[in-house]
Length: 305
Image (cartoon, rainbow, N blue to C red; front, side, top):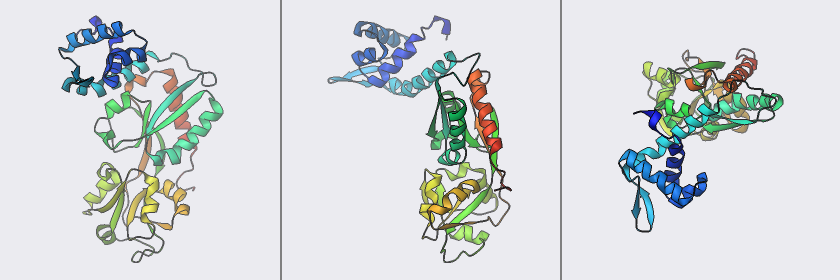
């Protein structure tokens, strides 16, 4: 493929056509006349040797290839947009832009709130948008990172991308305050016999993989996509949940739950900011990463809380 022969404006047209599935609406979206958008569609059809949009009755539907290209085109558009918005210099006090960060609600609660406060004070024109990390984040990390400014995730889940460490945490268990069979401590037998509440895909977390190495297979009764829902699913039940200590201390006042230490030496948790290499030398991203590292360093140490 000779990229020099391609008109990158076709990426804009392709995305609009695939998402709108209507030539007129796609043209209005990108500021092209209906004839100009029809000409772009014709060029795209010749390039891909596929109709992309097939008329069905009174409307258009995507062909099989068009459906494949839908997500890829959106990702390519985001990469190009970020590539050509790269800056040699960045003045946070004067710039206006938005940074998009993918993170769990845990990372936003423990770290993101403080990052937002510092950015508000030091860079009033900068906006932060936090997006929930999807369960598939570990399956196609490159695509995810190419379409965003960074991913907040602990070490041990993904690798092979640049990252800057933010802060340390540790794993603890939550149980109901009036749990009928757990007093001041848990046993390994408790972990195997009691029902669990887990966050999304538990097997991605090193702490849960550690349980497998210890011969403990969690009996998952409830799975949620928010760490902050765990206490509500624990209160008044026999369930237990593995949760980060920093977040547990924030959440125990909202539900009738208590923290219990693991009956083994749990692997440590080190949260990091991961990014796509395309951002490494961008001045705006250098500022973002430096600010994030500074905020993380200011969080109280676990032995000081």
